[in-house]
Length: 279
Ligand SMILES: [Zn+2]
Image (cartoon, rainbow, N blue to C red; front, side, top):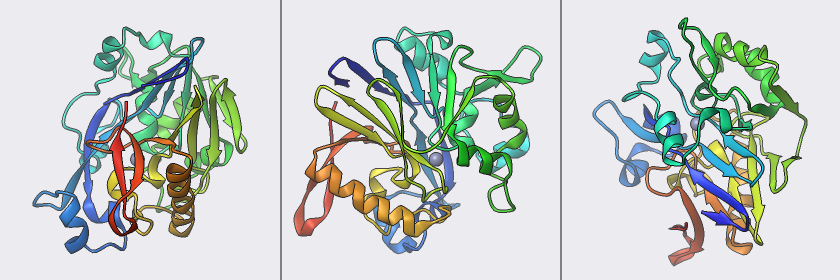
């Protein structure tokens, strides 16, 4: 998809399975089960869709999927169907990992940050995109490096440390313009310092809100994942996002949707918001 001179691509890094209840919070299965398929273990499939942005000067990756550095114990928690598709996806776009100049994490959960690493020759994790500056909110990084009993399973500190010590990490404090046409906005909700990425070009705006609205099944305000640390904030941000999507005709890039990668919203019957694919 193109916004003026800026090119955007939704990457399919991999997919994973997660407990359906964890993704729908207070919504009972009799209701979410009608809109989202689950298997006999109640697991649902989520795609891992980083966003790749070409500005003409920079090539930026927003979130990175799980990558291929999870150990056996971690893979039991996050079952992956196969290896990371990063190389295939970059090949498809005629790019090499060295071409990436920026990585932005919406937050540092394993399914967003671990793909920034790969297994090196000695089996130890190293940077997948060796020339990229890596951006994350300062508060998010602090929380990720100091997890509590609840967040420990999603922040894999032993791997995040490699990024911490890489010399490539740049901590961002609040809403900031990182590249021409590319800015970040703190949303909170999913984690206190989760951020959305905004891309502006050709008079249009794409938003990548990440896990405050991970898929088109989460457009409705109360459909908030049980894993969100502050669901009331997520709901408030979704009200704002839905209003902007409809009134300002923004384009959303979902991070975990199976069918909709880029979409606009329209108001359907009884005020129900429906996604419409674009790009
Ligand atoms: Zn996620």
